[in-house]
Image (spheres, chains in turn green, blue, yellow, orange):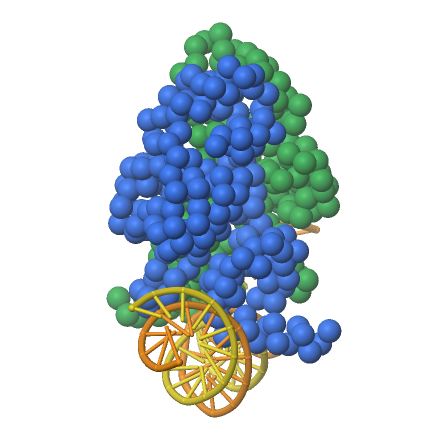
Length: 193
Length: 193
DNA sequence: GATCCCTATTGACCTATGTCAACAGTTTTT
DNA sequence: AAAAACTGTTGACATAGGTCAATAGGGATC
């Protein structure tokens, strides 16, 4: 059950078997069916979740009732509303399973305790967060400098598998464009190729 | 010379005087005049910089020659192109001083060595990076769900001092809108109030 | 196997924001 | 103090992408 996460951690920091065993004690497994929620907008994100299997999305809903997807998380990724998780303020986001999903949850206290018990985890989470920050910066950069079509192509290159697992209108939502726009972009890409 | 950074670190992790002394040895002070560059697009971001005094921006230039500002950094902030700093690949960004600026620089090796010498710095940088990640997420969220005017108002609330220090067209660039658009937004805000 | 829901497509039209150019203050440089 | 560079404003116009509504083909569900 813990193979995926332990191997993920070992990719970033060197831990021994004893430390690995200690880490396992902090997590709570949880399964979600398709369409079940891990977090509802307005609630506090008590957990941050590691995805062992499956796929989820985090999203928010604007004044006009439109959904905007902030993140997709599949195997080997973490997902939460970091702001709500760290501050224990209510979240603006919901997190929903898009497939049968298996998670390992850790709550705020155990997150801190785990780092006290195994200090190398500070380093693990630092590296993880740095990588997320870089990808967020690139996403903003793309939003500011590229057209919708260019951003779509970039996503095709960077996360081709995602496009196979997620309905097209959710890809549009993640890119920050209307589903009709993505449909038209694809049509025109097909014709001009 | 190190008061600002040491007090910034102490706000996030408990360090003693001995550790503080050790930390100081890793930094190189640097001054920049207005309009001088810390990093030029195409070069490798060898340093990450802590701002003791002054103000800088990081920005990229798109196909049409338009500048897009990714970050403003004033006193008590860090600035670099994190991607280039960590991977030692050439950067897509430039970093320029907007005022007389005093920095403390640390290079890639010393960044790692500092964390080996004072392991609490892993925690410090983890917390720092988490906070940056949260603010980036909010910026994307705003870009996706709000109008240009709403994003401008949000910035006015969150960083009022910045608007006093930076020309309006750079605020527009940071918001990802044309300078003319911001001028019109301000005009209309003034009349409807 | 009929119904319902979800998904994608298309057309007609709309709107927020961008573009280009002119102009006028201000600040900086010489 | 003149010239140059920078900054912000305004008007006319252009355009990328959004909105709304109709249609249609799967799956899923009863």
